[in-house]
Each structure stands twice: as C-alpha cells, then as structure tokens.
Length: 167
Image 1 (tube, helix red, strand yellow):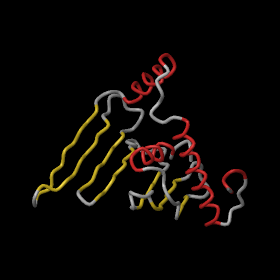
Image 2 (image 1 turned 180 degrees about the horizontal axis):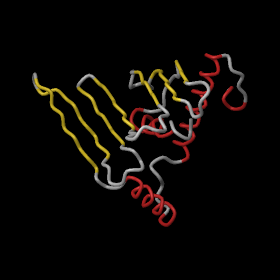
Image 3 (image 1 turned 120 degrees about the vertical axis):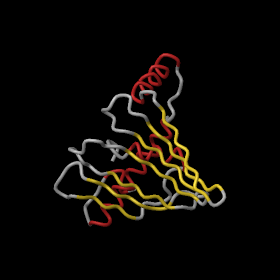
Image 4 (image 1 turned 60 degrees about the horizontal axis):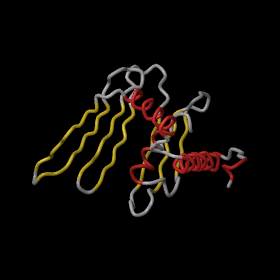
C-alpha cells in the first residue's frame, strides 16, 4: 500500500482530506505480487462525496500514467502524471466547466521535470530546512489510511490480521 498507492492517498489528502471511511477493497489477482487494488468510501466532511481509487499493476504496460479526477457540481478537474521513466513528459491539469450551454476545457501542462523538482525540493529541505509539502503529520495520515485499507480487506476476505492494522 505504501509503495504504490501512497501517491494517490497523498494527493487525495492534499485536495480534499483523508478518507472518512474505507467501505470496500478489492485485490486481484490473488497469486501475483503486487496485485491490483480498488478502494472506495466516503470523503471527509465538508466534501460530502465519495472516492474511488484504482491502482493496477501492469508491469508490461508501455505508457503507464496516473490520473486523478475530481468531479463536482460545476465541472471536473483531471490531473494526469505521465510515466515516471519518460523524461520531459509533462504533467497536465485539465479543467472542464460549463459556460452557458457550452462545455469549456482548459489544459495546463507543466514541462518541468517532475523528478528533478523533487530532488530540488529535497535539497532545499536538507540545506535550508524548508519543510516538504507532506510532512510527518501527512505521512502518518497516509499510513493510517493504508492500514485501514488493509484491515477492511482482511475483514471482507476473512484473512487473519495483526499489529496496528487491527486498531
């Protein structure tokens, strides 16, 4: 959970907060590691919505990307992170809204190298004590959410579970 789904959990927490509930977890196939994972539940108030998180382990898929979409009463936001092994592949944000009876779509593409920006931010943290976007509190929230996902999967499938995930 913390190796692959952590990024989705972190972005969700930064956008709307950590999930209020973990209602359903599906893991497949059972004989492959890492498996694909699907999670759904309620968003925290005042968001009053639901979330659906799907992470697919596709080791041979040539153009992996991560897409995060937020749908609301007045439109949608879609953030698309390209595959991490392609250099200079832009991250894009697409904003869809209604203008009268028409649909308006605006796309923003960041051409800066994402992993280079992460290294620069890490350098500022080490040399200038600039705190990271997700500090210890955010990391702890994501760990707790991951543990809740594991606990829910164990409850649904009857798998034995121990440690902090039980609490």
